[in-house]
Length: 196
Picture 1 (tube, rainbow, N blue to C red):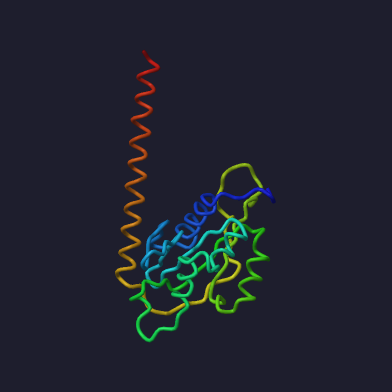
Picture 2: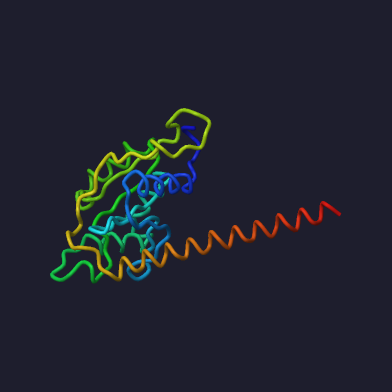
């Protein structure tokens, strides 16, 4: 599994499980549009702070987040780390920021963040694809926070930011139920066709 790229959906599924059931966060969502055109892979909140997780599956993808060619992500990091005289909440900036990466990328990614002290507040979460070492698709134990994120700011979550997360959670639920309905209709149609 060392050379095989891990799908980001595997990492996201494990992160959702970890942040909801292990850390018992109240709000959690994926692909949430915040602050102009910034999209968070995962946002979660325990009501006293909001954290963002950016999932990266390759080192080149991780490095691209900081490159001048990737304007939206570079702008996001510049915006998040900018010193402010007024409220951070006005800018819809999470309290903490993490990168979630496969375990094999940890040495390189960790070194990059050490070599670039402007990102010292960022945390790192590793995804252990072979943990536990069994053939069943378990999410328990696969996520480990190896570098805790420091606060970008200490302000309580802005009500608008929480509202964005809750609206996204609702949209994800609706999409899930529509998918279930389509699958049920498809199964009925197949059963009807095959029983002729």
